[in-house]
Amino acid sequence: MNLQRFRKIIFDLWVQPLCQLGDRLMPKKKNHWGFPVHHIKSEQFIENARAVFECVKTDPGIKKIIFCRSEKPEFELEGAKNTQVVLLQSWRGLVAIMQCRVLFVTHSISMDYSFRWGEGRFSVLKLSLRKRVVVNLWHGIISKGLYALANPVVRARLDRVKFRRKERAGYAGLICSSETDRYAMTATFHPIHPDRVWMTGLPRNDFLRREFEALPAYLRGQIERVRELKQGRRLVLYAPTYRQTAAIPDAVYYQFSEEEITQLRDMLRRQRAILGFRMHYFRNSAALFNLEQFVDGETIVSLGHAVVPEIAAAIREADVVLTDYSSVYTDAIYLDKPLVSFAYDLEEYRRNQDGLLYDMEIAFPGIVVRDFASALQEMERQLSAPPGLISEKQRLIRRLFYAYLDDRNAERVVARVRALQEARARP
Image (cartoon, rainbow, N blue to C red; front, top):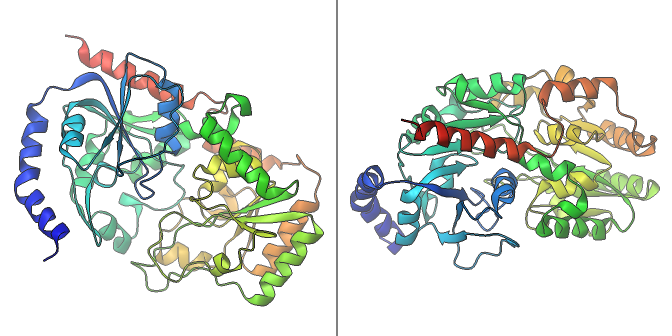
């Protein structure tokens, strides 16, 4: 038995029950707000949690605690006041999280605040949901079947941790971006009560609309990194979604041929453009998109999480967005970016994988293509078109998914948290 496995056994048998008891008994501090790092990319503090943090970072009345997973994280927290970075998997981390009245998650407590022991082993901190305000800052607009709406095979995998269903019922708030999105989120996160689904908009979309000079320094740096890669050329951002390769035998990632790559490079050179490839952050298969093998730094570049942690930096600089079923397309329409869906496995994805909440032909504003030749043709057509030509369909779909088109989404989340805190404080 290795040391990490032994530690997990000790934690589950002795420490976890004591933590649950201590969490119920320890008074929560109203001004202590807890923030998680990314649930997979643990070295990164990004997206909605970061956007909410940026909204309150200069407020000395809020003690902002960032729960990290490494000893010396580099989060570039310029200008932050009354902020503490704590190693989650430590006694200090346990005490700090027990004191937090407000706790943000971006995926789930089970993922964001679990203790990890290597080799896929983890222990869930079963935190009290009644003693604190837990707000789920889900990272995007849901366009696929997840949790309660997932197919039985995928749902069994997602809900293999029983605490996940319990925590969904106990969230004080779950953010959404429109009335349509509210219905989707309420159904997906069943059994959450509909009144707890907050139509605030997505905080990370503030980074799409905000003027460059008003952005946090760390994000300005990422945008400048993308501009350096572009070297004055236009950018096609290719951001495909995750495939359920661990649960579904027929789930596959597209494999580009040498001939297709040659055609792609020729087209990009003709259009004085580059293709920036951004793989989904969750990598649980050796058979991923082989496009990674063709990254040359000239016509095909990497815009993955290691290069550009915040997708806002890539979307802001993109001239065309190529995806499949990823909700990245809803980010793109926030800025009226031209869109193409390369849906090479559409029927398989609908039937056997996550499935789609919306009909692609209705809810996707751009062209949906099924093969590489069509995708290449459509990319070139979009690059050849005059900039700024956005269809009426895209504008209508933007209204479907967004009640707000501004940079105040994080402010609305913070206002809801403050209001909830005040309501609970009343006799």
